[in-house]
Structure formats: structure tokens, C-alpha cells
Image 1 (cartoon, rainbow, N blue to C red):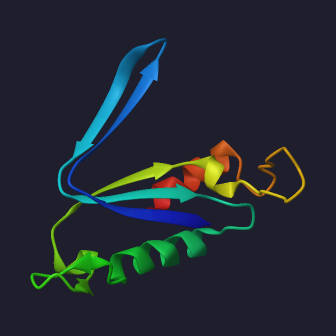
Image 2 (tube, rainbow, N blue to C red; image 1 turned 90 degrees about the vertical axis):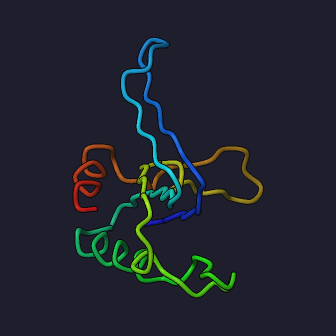
Length: 114
């Protein structure tokens, strides 16, 4: 599993179909989590990773020091699955492979664990 965590002042996710927005999700100040599930991941791995994201100290405290976690603040969280985090880049090759990325149905089941 690969996880990218970004502090945001606000974030919006819009899903569209045929050029029309069919679903929109907005968060205020919080954390945007982009997750790529890989072959070999298990539900235990997903739960462990979610706990790690909530416990890790990556948020500045009132003194500006990176000393706080999600447990210390009431922040919004937006989780977005993205299979491209499973990309493999090989030197000397022009193509990117996604052989390690998990299939969408299996990844969807893991997303529910979060």
C-alpha cells in the first residue's frame, strides 16, 4: 500500500459522468489522503496503515512545531483511492507498468475498511 498525506485548507472531489458532475465532496481544513492499494495488501494492512496515519505527528501545533497528530485536532479527512500510486517506473524503459496495483473491486473492499 502506498499512502500520500497532504494537509489542506480545503479540498473538493468531483466525480463526473459525460461531462456532468454526479457527486461532489468538500472538506474544510483537514487532511487529504490518497491511497494506492497493492497486490498482497490485506485488511489487516489497511487497518494498521489507517491507525498509523491517525497517530503520526505531521501537523504543526500552536507553536508551529510538527508535533501533533490527527488525534489532537478535529480535522476533516478526505480519502481518495488512486491506482496510479501502484505504478512501477523502470530506468531505460518508456512505459509505466501497473502490475502491482490492486484490481478495482478488491481495492473498493479495502476502502470500506478505512
